Image (tube, rainbow, N blue to C red):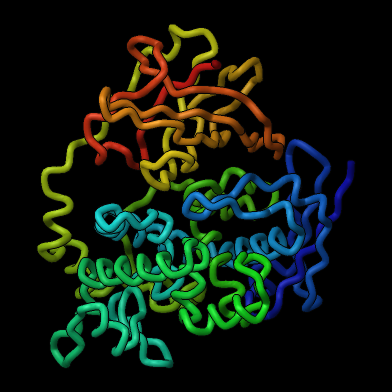
Length: 413
């Protein structure tokens, strides 16, 4: 089946200067994606929705089966892949900042997906200042910052303090979630303001972000966050939709940051200045308390091969230790899962089925697998097992061990 999808981006995407006309072909099919800068509209074949992997934000499913949602997500992905060097540099910055941000989010019980929000807000630059006067990593206005307990005065603007501003953002996001009942809506309110969002909800009688009619900035806001999440954690699933050169930059091992080129325009102010370096190297007391004494990664299981049908997958995204939460894993090798051949890089979507506090065990059940080669989602039934015994359930001696990089063995039920 031949599907033609034409993505035509506006001049603000600066695609014409880099890719005057680029064709990307899916290796496993005859699907052709064309990116052209000759028009200002986007023609979209809904057949592409079947190629997109399942996408989640804070455990909430993104309806990528809807044409308008898929179109907006792909547009955000393509925009972010217009500048290879800039994306590589923002990966460098995130690699330095995320280890400080993540434990603060976890302490406040805010989903880790929000670590991508300050990439959109400020490119993770403490001295970023917006035209409206918002300052810092999380771009707080002075009044909001003071309400959240931050000092805003000459010589001591805590909006520029990484740990303190992150903790303040957590308090604000928790408040928004409590009022709105959804992390997706909380993200929208972070951009648009709680009052404006509630007004739209009441007027339209609609509480789903993806179907609300919002201003242009807020309407694209979550997709920009999702684009960073997918490109940083799941880029292989979009082979054929983003350039091979960008895939190479996303998979390239990170090296210490060097001086950027002057033409990097993907995100503003990518230079990591001395004050920002200080924020990374000497976090405040809160950041120190959160990172001190943390255990090293769980020893990786090495006995998966003794189980027939056993495969290994590495945790990429966990939304929390609560029943029903969706966690994302990437397979680390080829194998067979529930009678189906699977490949390294395929994406496993698992549900937190139970947490047994008496035995201190975590039970994870996988129900879907996305093939990055076939661009197709399959239903399957796998459970995480103890690699040493083959029994269902993973011992959970320390919640801090549940983080990206955790490698688990999976076996068909």
